[in-house]
Image 1 (cartoon, helix red, strand yellow):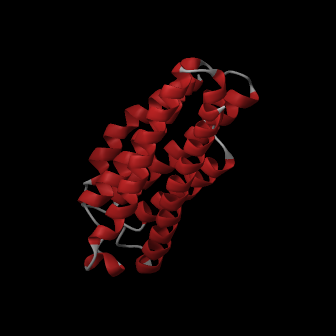
Image 2 (cartoon, rainbow, N blue to C red; image 1 turned 60 degrees about the vertical axis):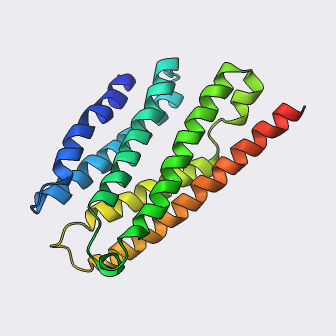
Length: 193
């Protein structure tokens, strides 16, 4: 069942991509709903796997991939169709900076984890998910949900919503880079022993 959740999140990515470019009131609503459901099911999948001890090697691989695909797709889409609210009318690149930081971190961290898994157990333990990574994910998911929702022009106060979402996205990008540094430092300590 848990593999189904991760596979489902990957499968709805196409619907997410299509809905993102719909120029109607329901486009932003559907993309936000899909993103929120993917974030919730991603959390639920991990929680149930740990709680019920149903984790599998394939699930451990697929779950983060599904999460990273959704986040990267969302960031790229937001950069290709920037928000027009607030400061973004004059500076659409403001989303590009954290998007590059987050996507670069995710690619690097995936490569580091894959390499660590091929080495020894101590290296794999050094890159196990920690609280900093969980905070990064929470702020990232919240920021992207807010920014996706703010694309709905019928909402009141979208400028404030966008500003809050972007601030959270920059915090998330900072946490992403910082957590990568922490993981690399842990690996370095293991290698020097």
